[in-house]
Image (cartoon, rainbow, N blue to C red):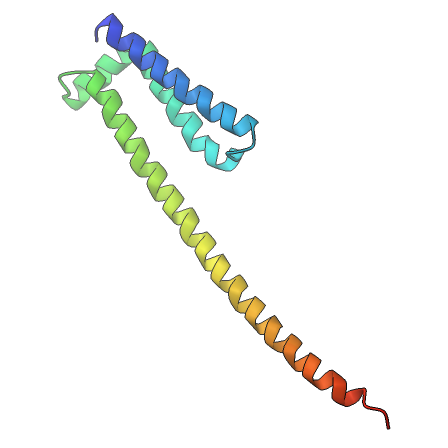
Length: 124
């Protein structure tokens, strides 16, 4: 890995980490969802800084150009994050459907109570 590529990788990894931390600080991103982003950005930053680890992993995996391993890890992270967020969205959709059903039941019961109320309150 040339020094220019290493510097670019360090800058991009550090920028990703800084953006995630800033989003957490502003409460745009919750801590629960930021954990994956922080772990992977730290891993990318570590591999960008310590070239020996990156080269050893690339050799072990049979990758000729070590910076390609960084790209491979980034793609892997995107797949893991997408799967995780798909699970979260699916769970939230089921909760929303249950809430809609509960709200419909409560609205029907309220209509029944309102219809019966004038009959009970009739002067006698």
